[in-house]
Image (cartoon, rainbow, N blue to C red; front, side, top):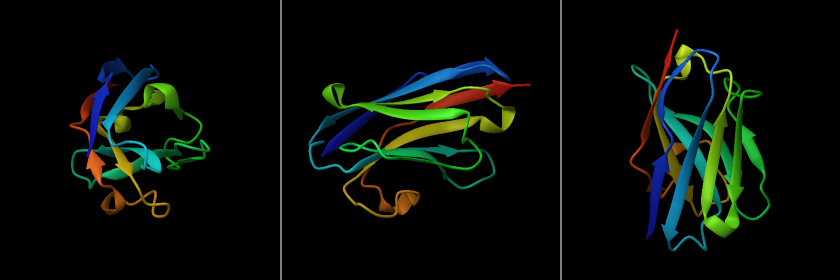
Length: 124
């Protein structure tokens, strides 16, 4: 089992920044990647960014590329999402997820463990 806990959500004005953290515990040694998804009102859960534990390979949704940065700290079993130039359309509940699988990094169905989510609200 893997437990994931997110931190760092909040309310910010458009153009501002937030940093989300996701602390992983439990049987994390076999997990291959960590990923941030978000649930935006009126939409399905959508992929935001992913990073692999061992090599640090990243991938981003087009909507956040150039504004968000995902990183990981292997020693702390923690993944971060630095969000800059935030827009009102970034508002939603952000979830981190862990997967043992080496493919399908953008697909929510490929993930085995999920955090409880943290709310991000960007005001215009």
